[in-house]
Amino acid sequence: MKYITDFSNNTSEQEFFTFLYDKIFSGDIRTFSNLKEFTAPCLGNSWTHSVIMKAFELIKRLYWGFFNKISPVTHQKLWKELVIPDSDFSGAGDLKRTLQISNLYVAMLDIHGYTKFCMDSRKNLSMMHILDRSIEIEINRISSACGAISQRERGDEMVVVAASATDAITVTLAIIDYFGKTNILSDPDIITVRSEEAASLPVFNISAGITGGNTTSPLIITEKGNLSGFLLNSGARLQMLASQLSSDESRVMIARQVQMNFLKENTSSKSKLAGNQSFYFFDTGHIEFKGVMITASELIFNDKHKVKEKYSEEMTRLLGSIRENLWEQRIFCDLMELIAKAAFFMPKFSIAPPVQIEEITQITNESIVQITQMAEKAYLNDEDYLHAITILRQLIDISKNIPSFDRHILDYMIGIGEKYSMLLAAFRENIEKQIEANAGAIFQGSYHHAWAAAKKSISAYEKLHKMGMNSHLITNKKKIWFNLIKQKMNDLEFTLYCGKK
Image 1 (cartoon, helix red, strand yellow):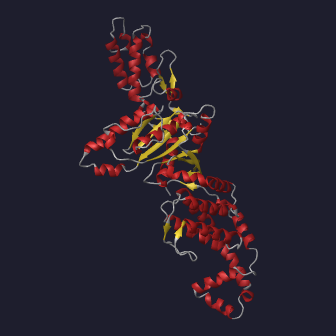
Image 2 (cartoon, rainbow, N blue to C red):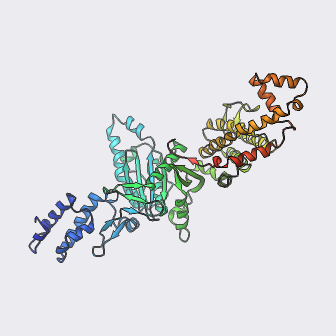
Image 3 (cartoon, rainbow, N blue to C red):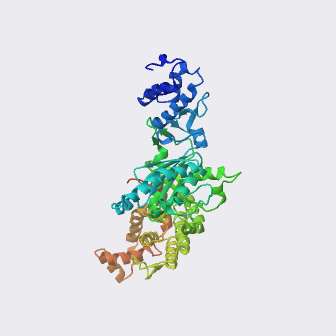
């Protein structure tokens, strides 16, 4: 056959398929609807049905890219969401190219230690081949068992697409189980134990970001069948944030919509995943990247991190205060209470103070609680905002040196500290005007002479300035501070930023 008009009753199946093969391989036919339209004159013969279906499989393999392995049998839910089914040919159809559907989820995963493994395996390339087969074959098998589909990207990265929040979380935990030799999922229907060959591979940790579940985040399938769009970008940002939390542990960040949809999916009838109660969600608030805001949670499944549940109420309270812009008092006090509660339940630690703070000579769980109480007293009772913010800055320096300190809390400490610090220059200038105006009454006798001379000596001046700040003649400090907050409210809007600075 050279032309479709050459088709006749004498045409063999092999000849017909070879003809269609050339048309598909050359790119003249790229979709099933094109194929069906092109072969319309031949469809009256019943034997052509099998040839058309073989040609459809070829179209899938060449032009469906990421989704070339899905079928209504192996990926029932994904097929329903991704494919426009044909009314005449069961099991065939066209891949949707623009996906603006709520039942689609993307997980971005990164294998920690991959580069080091490759460097260490330079003289034993068979180990690299084993890892490659594990990613290409075993992870695809695990993904299919979870009703999802996966694809390897740039060596140590994987992209997984699922048709429900439950499937997206399930496949992510299953992949973590496989690489980490753990049993978080504990589902006998999803085998995550490594094969004999892969058992020789070391333990790898995984960082993952899961997003999706709403129609406002479209996903584009390119002409080559690759994925593009906001879901991929947001999943990558969440994965990056999970990676920043810890480089030597598996961590998962998810968009809040994924959490809400998971809970909704498991309201009436619980999945095996929802029933095993091996994880919970820890609210981490709003995260911004490239001008886009994502409300996120951390998926807590490691027993080591389940301590977060002890201070989840304090975190939620702080996030609520931030949303309502309660900068006058609540944000500072809520932050101190969160730090204190987290320090109380963290694993025991003891380090030398990286910065001198009061008379404390050793930083422990108990001393962190003590420092937060000092800061809260300075802010609420003494109205000494300069001292309170100074303590917060010192707490940030201290917390950076505590290995077990919660990274989420540290990020909020840094962000909130920057916002409060922005107010201090204007606040101090306002108070200094009052000190100047009342210097004669504040500094009696020799102190007044010392105050005037101390302007030339920063160290002495700071001591006397603190004396002036605490004088009863300096009034309305709270009013000045609160007024500055109101004036700078637009500048105080705060969300965690994830991305390139």
